[in-house]
Length: 397
Image (cartoon, rainbow, N blue to C red):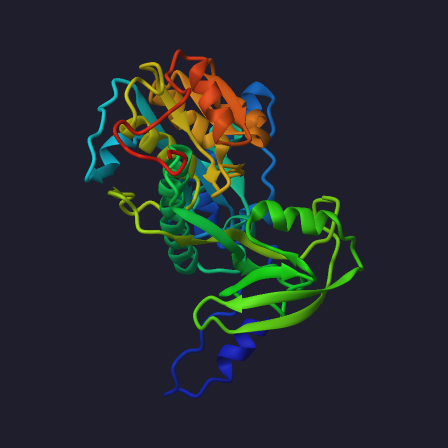
């Protein structure tokens, strides 16, 4: 008598029958064996025919959900999103605009957090699809929390784009008065000391007004050094000082490391001389900042900023005109290529990633707005001495 018979004979006649014991790991359910044969049989046969072997990284895939082919708890897929024109999304009221013949495109990435086994196989032969871990894409936040955060970053990006464009045209609209952030690195130097909503206004006796001044201050300090960080609460205006020991940057960047994420400049804005509104719809993230900046310049000035070409653009924009890095550049390049773009302008550090998805499309890396305009000048665009016709600028006397 085996153990199964013994257990069943010990049950009272009127008691419900107990569930069958789980199968040992070495005795798979026959239903699973049938499903596995249906799903994987063709691939096994193909492997036998061509002498190929498919190696599935189990720690990256998670597990396959029965009956659905979904990879549960596994990777997130980055796919090419869209490349959309920006001109129709920018509305200007109170001043004349110049409708361009060329087109500036902002690019997006499609994020699929429910990857199937078929999509995993597709990523093996397509350079346009990239699998990453959930932590790499979402960090410690939920999908909803990341969504909300990205929408906030988009709003900041749009406001900054307007100010940078008008400032480039000589219109005095705002000043940077501190550096804030939208996240703190877990277990980093600032964890438990700085909180989202703080604005850094000084490190020791060095005033911090923008990205450049923060970078200089950090470059002058080393891991292990301690400094007094002066902070202002963005909601209440309350000022406090915290002592912080700088850490080592995880990417080996020289200087002191604070451990803050998604750094933003606090901008004190003067009343604008006219209204500029950008409709980003449901799209989030800060990576369209440079594209929106160039679009505003194109609409407000005569001549063709792009030389009549179709130009895709990605990269954040800071108030000082610097262009910041973004993610998913290979997938954005694929989207720009599919849209027929003549040129793809990317942050200078992203050129290699962009070229991986660009095909024959030309890619140019830029560090700031001036370099982006120089790239458009190479297409025959009107980019020099840009000015708003009939409008008195801060430099006029």
